[in-house]
Length: 142
Image (cartoon, rainbow, N blue to C red; front, side, top):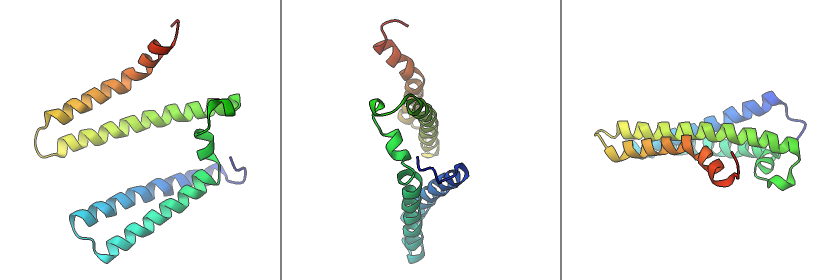
């Protein structure tokens, strides 16, 4: 990590980065469903550029991208521990958000779609059982 960037500055950059991504998705949705007027296109390009710049400052310049994508044998024990914790939290959050998005799509579809509900239920089951299944598969003794 680059030592000169404070925790509060990094947190602000996270908020800016994800905020820009959400704004881009909103502008894209508006443009696709209403019209691709010049202000919508310009706004989408501006927030996408801001997302890119914040990505560079947050992930690349701090070397956090390199840290979480490094092989475990290239890291010391502290780095392995903090990347493990960050991956555990991030994949838990990602799973919940992904399943909520899928559930919203299933409910907003305008009609009852049993396939989407079954996919949601199956992915929810997989999210809860996959970690213990990996341990069952890989560990000699549990």
